[in-house]
Length: 576
Image 1 (cartoon, rainbow, N blue to C red):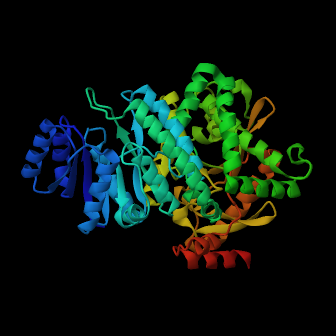
Image 2: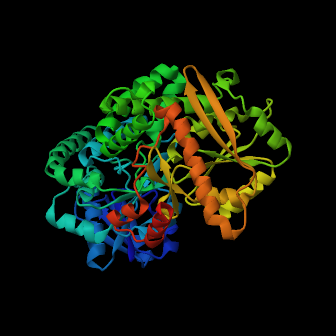
Image 3: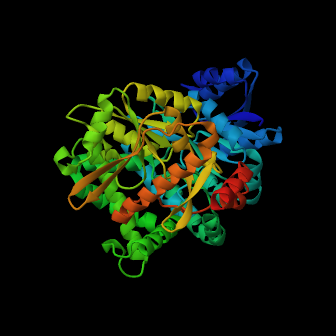
């Protein structure tokens, strides 16, 4: 990857020098585009270009707009042989310390646009903050996807070949509409968008060139054009949605600020305001999320075949059942907030097996709790045994829960629940968790989701009458920790919550020779008990993807080769 910098500038003379000084250590060629600035700024930019030999100044004779300046810089970098260009604003809004993360993401996904995902502080003007949600909504409509979490951030790395092809075949807005339009049209062309969280501030005394009425009218007209343009790309966009993906590669539906809005609504109006805001959003996700909707229907049909007597599974399974499933997920989100804010009293939670864990922790050694995406994991806060705080460490696989967890942590920073986010269960994770267990803490691991980084390292076991892939990682890790393992499920039953805990094994550790057999037996035991509890509350199992899709099939359909042979041999071994 050959990377250059592109900085558009129009009368930003306060922060541009500090920006260039901060960028100097990266050793990148910089295309500084003066978009018709006044004489003071033009003189300063000429001085800076003379001072920094890695800065090439390009001047527009008159002000054309930010989009035109960025386009000029990108095309100049492409003509000079660069493969990628990092766009940085000149006004000091962007956190330049995040450039290394941006570059790492571009190296890993060289064909994608790497876009900053703004994490704002209180300096953002409220009008702009709330106005962004309108654009987010229209971009989701125009792409029939939620992959673009933020289309207005000007902190990006562009793949220049794809961008130049777009410039040659299409016209784009030249002002504040550019950032949005270029991202949507690149997405239409099949370019992936990868987001990197980055802190964005609005410096005191900073200059904004956003023209309230003119730019809002311009952006509204752009969204109108993009909406009708989307209709032309409709077949391709729909086909793109139907391509099979591993669940952990699916993008999180819902931005950090949207989830924070939900949390603030909870603070102000409690459950009724939360539901008033959340239910329309869930209905939108239900209507637009075809893969999740189809996965819900498939699961409910399997569940009905195994548990036809359940009240939630009566009649022919159809969209009404699936919608109820989605709404149940929304209600569980509110319960998560309740639990995190300590608004669920212990009197509301039936925990008849509490003494088992109390006795275990009294020994001074911790334990592993194997859980699932059934019911509400946050209610493991009910593990406060004899009113004594017990440290509970929850492994969060992948970044999917990151937005929700950040908001929950803000609601109750003193929580005794420690969320440990990992991408895979490796040696470093094992060492960290070993310390937790030795300190008498609980480690909570979900056993019903594989990760994209471990595709192929699965065990197939019957679940709801069909073979499903279960990850090896949680069971191998439990064996490495060499401590008692329990299973835990927490279900809502009418107005109460019931925590079920049952012993799984004294230890999964054993000689290497019999590890495969122990692994198969452990997964079979887990899947059998999971099916039992899912049968008690099928609407509370929240895996909105094709849980039964074979890893080797996913690898073949997506063109991924990682671990393919291992996956197929494991699949054949477990089926024979």
